[in-house]
Amino acid sequence: MRSTDLAMSYWTDMCARVFGTGMVTSPKVTQTAIGQGALDIAQGNIFFANGVEDPWQWATQTTSNTALNQVARMSDCDDCGHCVEMYTPTDSDPTELVETRQMLATWIDELLSATPTSQEILQ
Image 1 (spheres, helix red, strand yellow):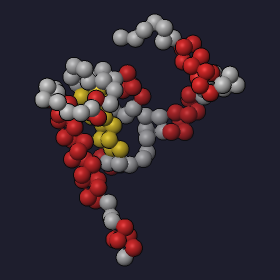
Image 2 (cartoon, one colour):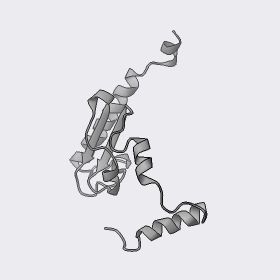
Image 3 (cartoon, one colour):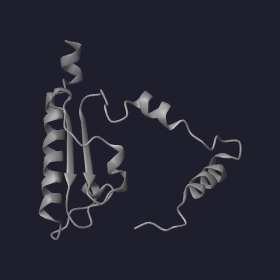
Image 4 (cartoon, rainbow, N blue to C red):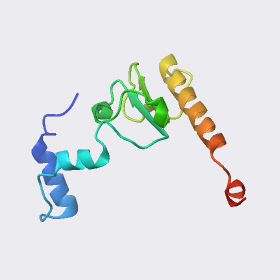
């Protein structure tokens, strides 16, 4: 649910208040998306974690790409919104969220164990 006050004019007015009135109010969305890879990001070692109630889920990759070690995980549970996997765990967390956190922890552990140490790099 979103307030009707959060129309486009709200955001452009906010940017003008934060960055000054000389800021461009019509960003070059298409050019920025293309420059960053849009939904075809070519960078490796990324874990895309989203909650089903996260409004930003539409701005990220939702399909894993094993060749680039990209994992896409959607936590489909009640109250699974933006950055929910980063919240402090509780005993009442939905099973799907617990699984997402475990997947992320395992992925990070594997990534770090595969990264050479500075000593190994110098040899």
